[in-house]
Length: 367
Figure (cartoon, one colour):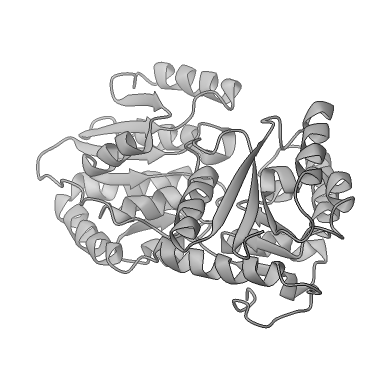
C-alpha cells in the first residue's frame, strides 16, 4: 500500500456544481498533483438523509478499505451515519470534511435541528480530525463538546479567473450564484430589487433549481407577481466553464444568504474582480472587506435594497468597488495552500498509534 494514499467517500456525484463538491473536486486534483493516490468512492446520493440501502452500501465500502488507510469523508455522509462509522473507527483513521454542519443549516423546525445536532455530534466522535471549511462552521461546532485540537479550519483556495469585462454602459448586470433554496435568500433579493425597478439592472441567477422545488416555485411566482420576469433570469445549474463566463460578463455579484460557512461563490466572484453586495455571514467580511462592495445584516431587506441602489445611482461607486475587487483578486488564498495542509493531516492520520491528542507535524488547530 502506498504511503501517500487515501480514500475519499463522497455522496452522489463528485462533478456536482455546488460549493462543497467544487471544494472536494479541487482538493482531490491538488493532492494528486502532490503525488497522493486518491481513490474517490461514491456513496449513494440520499445522504444526509440516508436510506437503509445507503447505509448498507456505506458499510460495505468502509469494510473494503484496508486497515490503517486514511479515509476522508464528506460531511453530508459522515454526519449522518454514526453507527456505521463507530464500527470502523478503531481500524480506520477517519477524517470528517464539514462544509456546513447539518445542525447549523437554517431550518424552521427547532426539533429537527436538535435531532440533527445529536446525530452529528455522535458521528463526529469517531473522527480523528474534523476539518471545517469556514469560520461559521467552526463556531457552530462549539456546542458539540469536541476537543478543540480535534477541529482544524482549512478554508477554500481560489483559481485566479479571467477579469470581469466591466462596462460603463447600463443596465448593470448582476449575478447571483447559489442553489435556489430558502436560506440562500433569493426571495429577499427579489423583494429588494422590486423597489428599484425604475433603475437599470438585470439579474441572472445561476444555481440548481431541483434541490428545493417548493422554494423554486415560490420564487418564480413572486417574480411574476412583481412583474420582473423580463429582468430576472433563473438559469439553473451550469458547468464550471460556463459559470466562469457568467462571472466575466457581469458587473456585480449579489447574494442575500442567511447563512454561509465560507461562501466559495463570493470568493470566485472576487477571483474574477467582481465587487460584491451580500450579507454579513461566513467569510464575507474577510473576503469583501470595506472597499470591494457592501455587506448588510442577513434578513434586512431595507439595507439590502439601499446597498443595491447605491451603485445603480452612482456608477462611479461601482467602479471604485471594482478597483478594490481587482486588488482583492490578487491576494486570495490558493488551492495549493489548502492541499498542503490536508496532506499533513492525511500523512499524520496514516501514522500508526496516532491518537486524537497527537499534534506533531499538523497544521495549527483552529482558533
